[in-house]
Length: 132
Image (cartoon, rainbow, N blue to C red; front, side):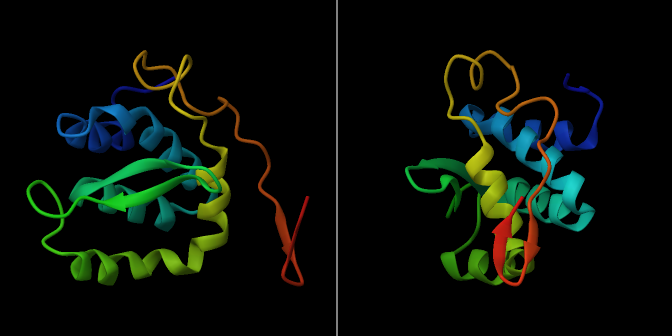
């Protein structure tokens, strides 16, 4: 259930006026990122708040795409400098983006969560391999 007083919800809602279609996905992404790392969740909040959207991708589930220009980043170079902070979380972030459910019957448009209410356990990383 969404807590409408939660800072994550409030920050995502601010950008919703500009890009409303992906706001429920951002709420889920940032919430589940917070289960992994407070710093990762804060980085995602910053990127969304400055200007990013989630775009469906056939291989990765979703990708984070910067908004360049009005209501977004001044340039691609500015975004590229700022997103470097995500590099240390790239494996976890890729898993979270892949777990987002596509916008549809139970996601965008009716304010229901886009991923399951209880996050599945994150995989552990052993010797460079992804395993459960």
